[in-house]
Image (cartoon, rainbow, N blue to C red; front, side):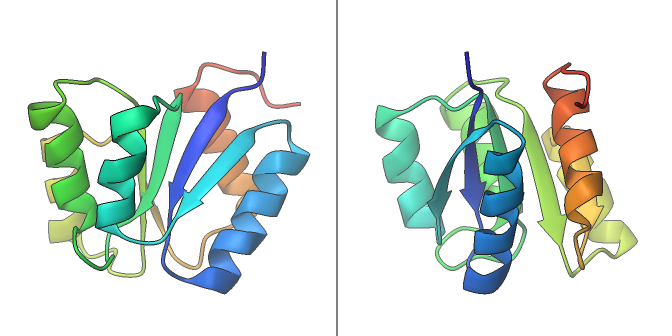
Length: 124
């Protein structure tokens, strides 16, 4: 059975590249572009993993982690990607409950390995 990923990224070019690479590797990928859409999506769907930018309109990646962990009481795996990869953001993401953190520019092959690791799948 295919794993379903939620990709929360407001950069259209990056999200289409990552969606293409993830789908090519056998994942089903749903894309949202802001925090409102994340909340709406999670109301009706439960993906196997969330990959989220840290800087999004309406809700940051840090607020997303807080929402999933504390409002939804979910341990759904979350990988944060960010161009703001300073130490404070990385530490905040992990303290809030992120499973992994990647700095932009994101290497699609590295993202695939990290997704597989978080989902406990061996990369193909």
